[in-house]
Image (tube, rainbow, N blue to C red; front, side, top):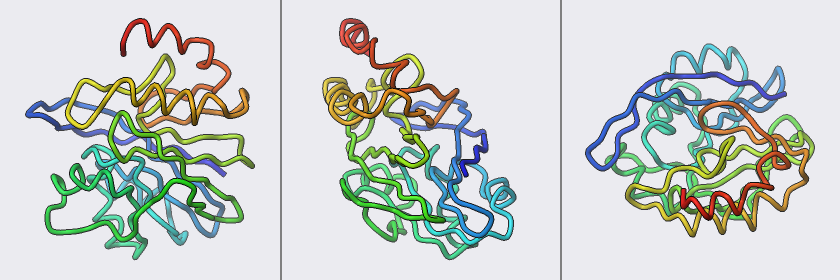
Length: 206
């Protein structure tokens, strides 16, 4: 079971602030759920969770709009917060006095309600960006690595365009074409819908 909640708030980096809507994803069943990207509104996320047990709060990367409700959610559910260590510099800008509970690593497998999510390190948008691939659900949760229409933004600190292209080419476009791409913002897409456009993205440079 995959559930989507859209929360609204602000993304702040490099001295700029932008209004954003974020996708919060819940994966699980009627007993337990895993939360992907706890952004902006812990109360709304708790409302969507209901009385289910939260197995983990997974951060696809450390930008504030993807983690700024994680600590409050963790405090109220006792669930661990998981983040790739390469994104600690971004995490620490939001939570200088609190560390994530566990580190994510490429190849890790997270299990919830009998579903396995495989962690893929996909740097580029952020150094510690990860995607979560659930083969049984024919879904990959891409955070801000891949969207409908191209890669996530790489124009700000700690991001790099050639790196995100390498991540997408090697890790994501090799997935089955029918795989649904559930993103950090906006509408979902599919691997097969995006794969033909790789060269266009490289040519335009973003």
